[in-house]
Image (cartoon, rainbow, N blue to C red):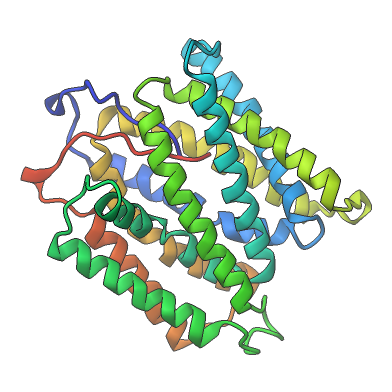
Length: 323
């Protein structure tokens, strides 16, 4: 998800979020929530890095046509190539660890753990960058999310409850997913800074292209791809990741961020872990346990507390997004 209104746009140029905008935000939140499930279906028959390569190839093609339709020029100017390459490397590392982590865990764990990147961003901004205040509300949000993560990792990882009905999570897979969330937080902050001198569409296109080259190169060196194992479900899952998550979600959010403050939209991201767990249970048969429910609620409330801003304190800011 990598677009946002220009920092130069005045706050009064943006509209209050209305019912239609809420429906659109919840729609793309639901689509994003299904991404771990789609990845899990993909890696049932294809290696995880190859899945990422094909997914981002589709996303890159979509981004190319998006930029053409928008009239955005893709030619890089002086000082823009290095940030695009670094963003692409960050994308490669984050998605590679995410796909590998999903392979070794399950969809419900993945959707909760990857969304902890919101809290990593806050910690980095406060501790290292000194650019964010540690308010009581945000501290409570991070604390709640930490409780949720501990419950996910200690109460469900390695459980045999899902062996007969769903994917079995492992401690190693969950830790890799946490690492992916940390990488995503660093990449988010980097992209936010890079957007000050590179147009959003251009940055997303080039970071995707760099990551695609890295995905295919790494896959060719480390994985064996057996296309004879590909099923209709595999194809649908990859199309979902590349077209719907990488294309439709990006387009809708880009339009929303031109009309509404990013803080108004970000607050609805609390629903992502809740939707993600529900979809994982419905489609992958992930086990439903009291601890899983409590963990999802803790992470969701944590995201809500961190993103919630009183109307008087709302500011216009770009919210990086990854297709």
